[in-house]
Amino acid sequence: MGIIELLIIVLLLLWLFGYFGRGRLPIAGGGWIHTLLVIVVILVILRLLGIV
Image (cartoon, rainbow, N blue to C red; front, side, top):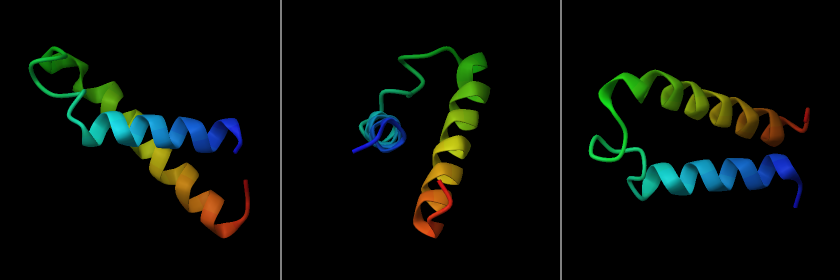
């Protein structure tokens, strides 16, 4: 397993388990969390297409 797959899995699991919830992070921190999730989705799509 490469580092990209590990990053994708860790970020998705943290998001699914609610680590990035309102109680954990301030409201203003939502922008970078969504940016990370968009990056993860892009990496997953590129991995499925065999580009990365």
